[in-house]
Length: 86
Image (cartoon, helix red, strand yellow):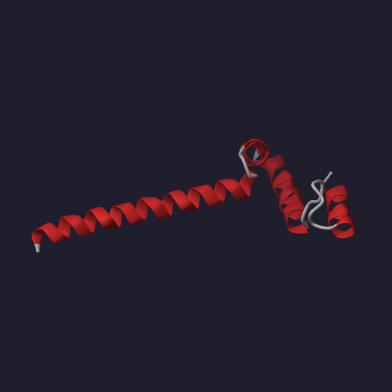
């Protein structure tokens, strides 16, 4: 299926809703092959890709955003605590 999506990517443009970027197709193929030896990785990857809003890229962006929010709130708490003692 990704082969058809890559074909549409090159011939119809990236804005085609059925287009698949070549890098994404390669990653899907690699995870699929690796999933033959480690099914948990394959099931997790394709489950997140299919059911998480934005797929794997959406998950990574949300996770990164949550880490940045957590670290900034921890820095604020630390600065408030240290400010109290100075």
